[in-house]
Each structure stands twice: as structure tokens, then as C-alpha cells.
Image (tube, rainbow, N blue to C red):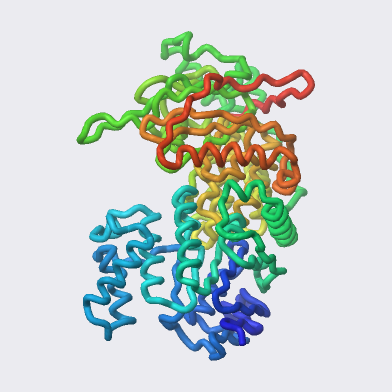
Length: 602
């Protein structure tokens, strides 16, 4: 008899013509003490599946049985931890766990309950924060409370529904280690929904993909026979890990591509945005910039004194963007705090840089300064010969949260920017630009849906489409895929690479994902821990373009690059301060393999 069995589970939402079949024919058996990881795409029904096991929803067809008995509702013998923490904000760490323990073990003496609560607080390393309330805790600490609360109820089955997906890489790694230790010490049966293939292989006995919905079904299972304990960097050399990772990833890419749809018939109109740095009036007229814009540009030039050091055009493609001793200092009650110190970097035109490091190392601070959204305390940044003194349409920014107007459609959200930078275009040309980029990011069928009706992944696609549609000189990406499951992230990385290949826009992407950094970048800039964060190392990524994740997995140098980044991050995990490298110049393009100069775009 299986400990947990799902027999032909089907679940639909809606009614009539609007009915959507989310799960279709889900069959799964799990033995006692087994750790099973289920990976799937955003919107594929992972949470619906987990809620069915927890007894929070009832399937339309089929049956879930636990220890041979049908599940008819929630029970403390099946503990669940969701992606969101669901903590009582007015209660302390102790109080949040006590609330659950008192419900399940009401017959225990108070002293026994207290000892029990402290045991699980210790297990998730929160003894120092026992009296803090959720508002005083980081995201990782709040998730530790949720894990401790679920474990303190001593469930026979622990259900983890993407509990780590919203956390930074270091916090996520630490919690993975704790979950792994707990699974071995407590000998729990665990079902983990995860958006991370590496996480699944690190923790589980079996990994099972959930194919894309609607009518999502389970794919083939992958057994993990790697000996425990499993160590991340060591697994990087393990042939079985490499083979498993490749097999699971290729399967997910295959089913993801089969589910994706784009319209390849759309063509961009031949029109430049009004923020392009066109050197002559004739060139601006050729771009159909109206007289009012030409007059304003001339008036500004006549009234503003020209500083030759700042405003003289920089025609060196190898120094298109220059960071010179860029420093950010914040005042605090205890005195000035230097978050970023003397950040130096030079970028060539059309180069793609990944900026990586642990949380709090100043990656986003650097990005916000080049975006003009955060004042530079010392030093300076020059973009195409002009000093950055504030925000401007020559820089497109995509944040982790896409910042859309919820009452506007995807089309209208992109149109807001397009109208500003293409006022000289006619209505059809602007329409073509909007539809081209929305189609390229896979939203051909959802252009007229309101932002409030879109999933997180779809909202981020709109944000990416909007940024590219403005054709900026510099594209700034601040962990643009950080809130997405890794499978949606892979898909959008491919979209980003495909659109970037067409525009060759100079770009900086802040990320905590090692694989994302390698996939996207010409160079990976590694930052030391803050405060006083600076450039710790720079790694040239000498891999052919265009790149795909599948090609990356098959390239002989991929795992070497991966190990270099993992080693750097491990060294800085506990505040290590390494030796800063001297060279931060971009590698000049060779005659044989010249860098393609982008069109004069924003």
C-alpha cells in the first residue's frame, strides 16, 4: 500500500465556455520516507496539485488517498508551507509557532509545548529572533518561521509549495541545506514543488516534471541516485549530476517549446526613436523628428554651456559606458555608510554585462545610479560621451516587479512609452512596433488583456517588451526574472537573447543566478560583499552566440565558468574579502570576430 496515492486526479476552474481544465489524469504513488520534487511551468497547476494533496480543494474527478484512506479535507498530519509566509504580523516568532502547536497538542502541559516550540525554532536557526515580529524579519527568516511551524505540528507528510522561490540565492541555499538536514533527521515524507532543477536534484529522491497546462499531466520521473550528503560545488564535477541536469532541462525545454506560440510574420517599421543620439539636423529630419523637437534641442544647446569633458561625443565603442570610482554613501544615525565604494568599469558598445553577488552587495544600487534614479555620492558615470545626472529615456529599465498600470491592457502599457519616443511616427507604425515586441515575448494572443488579468510571468514579458520597444542606448535589467519560476525564467531568457540579438543594445543585468549570468553575458562582473562593495573579479564568457540553454549545457567550458562563479560566491558567503583584480577594461573585438555595432537606438 502506497503512503500517498493520486489516482487520475482532474481539476477544472470556471464554467460553460470559460471552463479551464487545469489538471488532467494525474497519477502518482509515493512511499513513506521518500522525498519527491515536482517541477513545472508557471500556471501549470502545481499549487492546485499541492492543494489537492493537502485537502484544501477537492478534485473534480479521481481520488487522493493517504495511508489507504481518502483525503476529504485538511489535517495536521499533512503540514504545508506555501511561497507566501502567512504569518500573524502581531505575533512573535514564538507566538506564530505556538498558535499551531496549541491547536494540535492542546492536551500537552504548557512546559512540554514550550520545549517543543523551542526545539523547532532552534532547528531553523532562529533562537536569536524568538521574540521578533514578522515585520522585523527578513524574507528568509519569515520563511524559516513557516517551515518551523509546519514541522512543529509533526506532520507525517510535509508539503512544500515553492517555499524558497522568492528568496535570494544565498538565503535559498541556506534553507535548502536546512530542509535537507531536516528530511534526514526527521525522516519525513516530503513533496516539494520547486522552480529550480538544481534544488530538485540536490534534495529529492525522485524528480517529476509537471507538463504545461491547460490539462497539465505528469511527465517521466527521474531517479536521483547521487549519494548523500550532496554538496553543490562537488556536484558540479559529478557526471551523474551533469547528465541528470541535462536530461531534465532538455525535457522541460522541449515541452515548453511545444506549448509556446509566437507570430513571426510581424516586421518592425524603419523608424528611429526621438531619443537617438543622431549627430546632425539632417539625420534627425531623416528620422522624421518634428520641428518642435528640433527647435527644443537647438534651444537647449544654445542656452546651456557646453562642458567639453562631459558633452563632447565619445566615439570610442570600447568606452561607450564608463563607471569611474562610483561610490554611494548613505547617512545613518551611526554615521555615513558606504554601500558601494569606487566601482570602476568600462563597457563597449553592444556589450552585455551580468552583475552578480550576494544580497546586499550593492548590485541594485549600482544599477539605480546608472539609471539616474539614485544620486551618485562620488565619482561619475558617462554614457556615450555624456555624464549621467538623472533619469532619461536613453536608458530602459526592467525591474523585478514590472510596474504596469493594472487597468490598462498589455498593448496600452507599451503604447505609453512608444508614444513618447516615436511622436514622429504615424499610428500604424507605432502599432507595428508595439505588436512586434509583444509578439516576440510570446504575448501575441494576450495583447488586449488588462495587466491585472496577467500572470507574473506575463507581466514581466510586457515589461521586457516595453523596454525594447523604446530602443534605449543602455538596457538595465534588475533581476527581471527573480520573481518567476525557473522554467518561465528560461523561456524569457531565450526571449531576451533573441530580441537582444536583433537590437544589439548595450545591457547590464543584475542577477543572483549563476546560469543566467553565463547565458546572457559577454562578461560577468562579480561584486564583493557590502558594505564598501566593489568589483571583486571579472570573468570573460568566451562562448559563441547566439546562445541557448541547450547549447550551454553541451559546451565543454560551461561547467568551468559555472565553478568559477560558484567558488567566488562561496568565498564571499561569510564576508570574505578577496583581492580585487586590476583590469576592468572590456576585451577589444578582434578583426576576425568584430562586435556588431548596434543601430543608433535611443
